[in-house]
Picture (cartoon, rainbow, N blue to C red):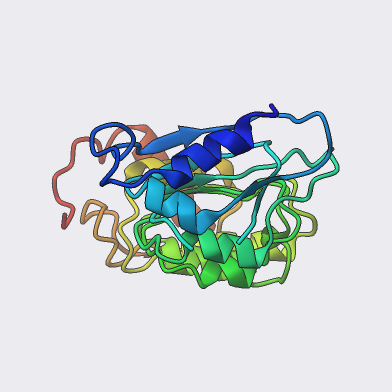
Length: 248
């Protein structure tokens, strides 16, 4: 799409004083799956784009070759996934940090396939509210053995979905799962706990003590596989359904 740079330029050149009722309310922008006739990336001047769209909260650039020309907007949702089979490796640490520098309420981050993003970059993000973290095939998922674990520990209080498929090796994923099962003092609730128990049938240790989102009868330390199997069975049988004993 040869005209996309001109669209960004038009949005970037807008100011509230010139067009108070036209574009100032733009909150979501989806430019995913856009291809160009060449292999050149589409450059965005993020500073000007921010001024033209001050209310933007969701930016979806999945599978579109975007790069920054020159920061930041306060997104709550950023999607910049790339196709791992292609020739574009996606954005790097400096670009991610520029886009999300002020996004302290970011809830959804999809950077699947990005090969130039480190785990330390994500851990440094200002948000503590991540609910959906999509890292399948991303370098950040395997950059270091404890990277995923640190992400889980930072966002476990709010995390609802974490996608790490196609992550090479076992240590990083194992450490992340261990961080999940050491869920003490988090707000994990019944639905994600049920999924965890269903998909990890070999668990032998699970710490649910002080979990504010669970019923009081569940909040304890499970140190043996039989204890966890019993918990799984009780959940399946509906023992804790519609239980109002959580602390929230």
